[in-house]
Length: 504
Image (cartoon, rainbow, N blue to C red):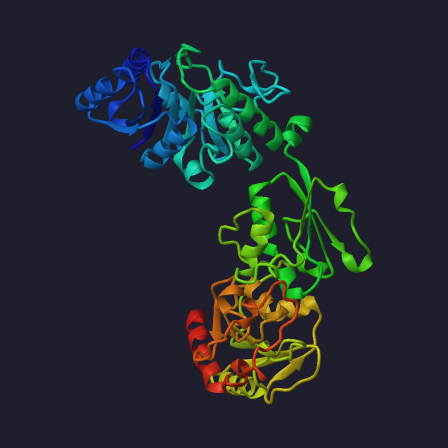
């Protein structure tokens, strides 16, 4: 189906008749479906609509028991629609010949155009947030006659009926939300007749109060835009400590930039090297050199303790909840090293002890066994860390951050503890075999390529996430961390086999 025309009606059956007659007179019947929701009409609208559905064949009817306004019913119809393009239409309009094809043509071949409307309608937003007819700039598309690709609606939604109520300001809000995300809007002149102000009479609701409330909500949401008429804003993110935790913040920056492409992002951390070459960052500030004043920025997101106070959430999702965005599957990314293909059969092992975390340190014998197993499989073993070599048969390298990224990005498999090097491996999509005890593996897996080594028959596994937040360090609930002590080399080998299947 090419087009889904969406109508929400409440009484005024005479206007609906004129609208439907014009649609069927001026639209290619085989190319469109007509979805109509009746909002508890008290006149003969329902009788007429049922008659039209039987007569026309391509009408789908829906009925509300009470008048729910414009936004929620339109969102419902959009979810039911099957067309490639959705056409939001008021029933007080009469369309013209070729209107659907001409509106579609306005999209051209530009995938960034998200909305097309009529040039004779309001297109500029006044200083108080209301629509005006001044044409010095095109800021929004009026929803009385609007076409939008269904793919755009599926990805970004239609009207925000959780923020606004009933109707009014939903179209200007939609236009600004899409434009803020980097989309464009367009208008075309069409001789479409619009009988304005004919459908809002005799309503039993406080329509003026609804309009005033939505106007104030709109002004609050878009205060920055209304003041400056630009979507550019300065944003500060901060995650101070822990290399792995900083790496796990990179999906948040990427998702934020996708949602707000005009944002100029600064990230403050003691690990600025994580953001070297990151295209989403305007500036990285090294917190070892001083502090930044958050008041200098339009928005500030402090990610310190963001997941520590949400111990039962995946770390990236906890960051996202703090910022109020959806990461949409964004995984950690580091741009320090460029992946130029794998360096043959190379395995990186990081067995270094993690201070203060007994529930993260597997026995060294398990890593020794893993290294020997990989050697038998023909893999070159490079051990990394900041101390000294501890694995027989492995080449030991003490690296800086850039060298470590280059090594891990070229490896076929990573074996190590839940620490910074492991998250580097996630950032480069390297399959990783990691022992987990006090920490639940699903709350640290952000790449889908993590193969956890877990002692299954221990009830207190993941105990770190049961203890009262925020948890900065970890202490064992038992006298000894048997969740780690019972991990064997054979268990490591079994997960190594699974991980290498991914490499194949």
